[in-house]
Image 1 (cartoon, rainbow, N blue to C red):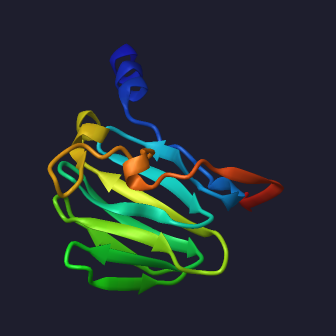
Image 2 (cartoon, rainbow, N blue to C red):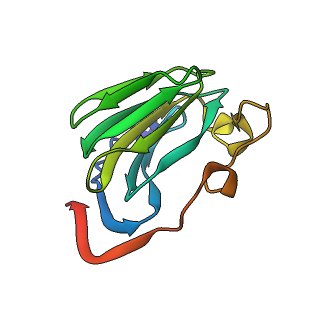
Length: 155
C-alpha cells in the first residue's frame, strides 16, 4: 500500500488556468499562463504594434491563436498573413517572423510554445544578424504597457 501511495504522489497533476489580462491604452504585455517542462502558454495583449523586429527562436516551436482583434504576421521575405479571431499560425523553430496589431482595438493572442524549459530563454531568440534580441528591448520596438483601469480580457 505504501508503494502505491508514493507512486500516486509522484505522478504529474492536471492544472486549470484562465486568461485574464488588462486591456491597454498603449504598449504590450506578455503573461505566462501555464507551463510544464516541455510546453508553455502565454497570453499576449497589444494595444498597438507587436513584436516588430524580425526574429526567430532557435529551440522552440510555437503557435499563436487570435482570440480578439486582428494581426498581420510577416516572414523574412516580407510575406504577410492576416489573422482574425479563432485563426492561428504555426511557427517552427528557426523560422523568422514578426507581427503587428492591425485591428482597431487591442489584440489578444494565446501563444503556445514547445521545446524544453532550459531552452526557453532570450539567448535563443535572435535577430537576422545572429545576435540575441530580447522581446522587451528598444531593438524590438518595445513600448511600456499602460492598462485601462477596470477593463479586462477574460475571466
